[in-house]
Length: 183
Image 1 (cartoon, rainbow, N blue to C red):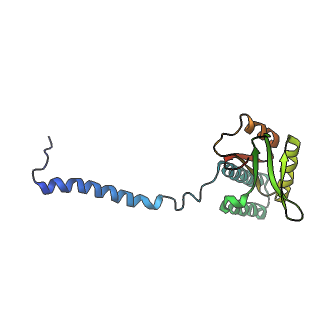
Image 2 (image 1 turned 60 degrees about the vertical axis):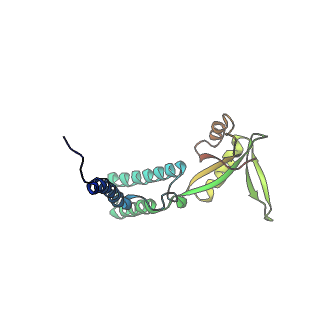
């Protein structure tokens, strides 16, 4: 049986050594912790867009290898894939904002006129949503289109609203719903 130490100095140093070992272990783990972890995180939509683009490029490289493409083409595709992996998520995703009007149960966004005045454009049905998504996708076809739909804070999104809007946009764009806007 282990007997507790009889001297007061020894009783003090044993717990102290345990604490020092714990602090040393934390010190050793610090380099593995991500620097600026809050700023480097991707939203689910951005992460999914990144995964799809990387998978698409990897498929292209695999097809080129199977088809016996020239080494220059394969090298070019591998470089494009490496470049795509090194880009930040904000460089890969085209983010647009939409808002929910709680009173009318409509979706809207702010646009500018030719004179520079800001007005509210409502999106009331699927065809308007498809038209808007198609126009935004044509702005920069190399980027994934992501709409962040803001609904009024303090209240949950309307029931069935997320499904309805997702049906409107279909596969043209990713949608992410967040509190913090709308009326």
